Image (cartoon, rainbow, N blue to C red; front, side, top):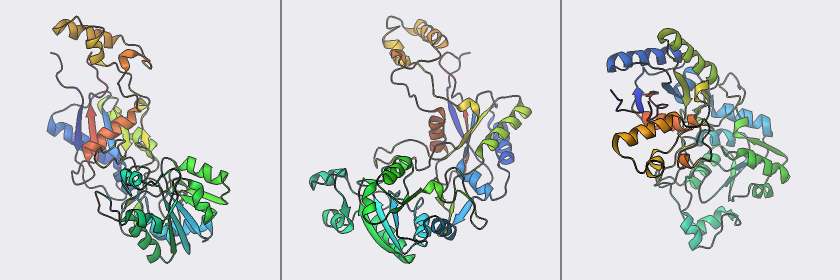
Length: 396
């Protein structure tokens, strides 16, 4: 009998994972219980996705605002400090800002506009056009921004991030100067010590600052890259990928992910004889069409994955074949011709007409996005996602 179902993604419920728990044991046990209760079998090339949050929580990978303050003080010496291109997020940046502000007497906070790097808007781009402001050439003070646009609220959260971030800085005991510019070097008119707070553009930002004469430059990936007073840390990403835990602490992106995914894969292979791929995932890499927000505030979609998830899809477009190569066929003859073509497709379809319109993104970005959408970010209680049939094609 021919198969009638392709890819299936299941959210797997687990116990609430706490600090010190063995994630490997919980994931494997929860998957096996789900398979027994729901009547599915574990198979070769199935994929287990584990949300980064529970991995970091089990590791106890937390830092406090005071830990952050100590590390920033150590790196910048308490001098007037420029903060560039922060993400507009209470969850992602508020506690970081509180810690950073405690390390200095004066913060020069410079926003990129009309939105941050992942699309959270400060002002609608059409408003810029209406007022003749060019975000690539015009550099605004806080007063100039307010005169042009007044109070601007985030469309989803209703937060005035300009005032909110100012209040955090001032409540932490520092003076605050706010600027708006998309040119990193603009901040050097106020200070030559800069902490780049952007995620995906951080290397370019730091390069431009140093070229423009900055005395000292670091990125958030360099803050909390080592433990401070027994705190958590992340040697690769520092504060990037962190999420608010309490008003005074954040949970960092997990570390040591590769040994974890490989251990789960090996244990399942020993127990079932099947080669299951395993990945840890954070934000999915997709864009919200209403708010124009690109959801990837983490530095990567997946900080750790098994070898079978390396690479990109190598797929042909079925509708292209049906409309071109086999346009004269119908019904079972058409199905057989397409299945045969897929079975004999080239190993590398880059540039081939039959592959146009397929998605040449990294497998971990695609599968991580599927996991993120399946598990959600709220109260579903499924931090593990089990995917079957992802690597199947119409020929199977």
